[in-house]
Length: 149
Ligand SMILES: [Zn+2]
Image (tube, rainbow, N blue to C red; front, side):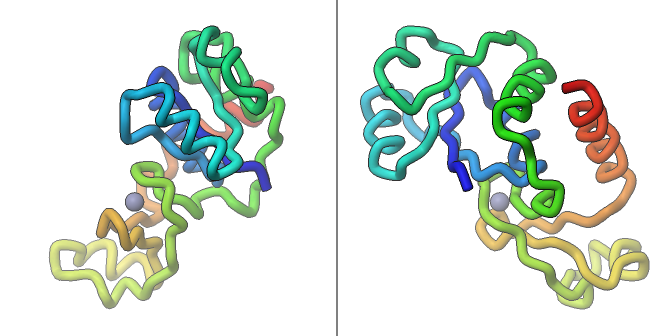
């Protein structure tokens, strides 16, 4: 399974790709040298909009499109997604989500608890994800990507 690093110009695409199960890091620093070192150390494919940056690393891919929808399509065309991995990764931090019983949620989530027996949880962000109305919108957008590549 390929693992990726997205540059700072691909933040929005990066979040969408994580929702589709791609293991895709996002730089915590702004120093190109440090980003490259991290890619080499972790054997990551670098996705970048910066042509000069692209030329510096043999496992990099130059992303041509300027808007996130085209960028996502460009990437999933090269690396087809695994549908069984959809919604398994936190879009915020890239951690793998775990299934938890909704009983563990506090009472701010009463309606979620009554509608869903299990929800996804990101330990790092302490954030829950469930298949509510927001999820339907995300699913629709992902289907749009998948049907237009
Ligand atoms: Zn997270």
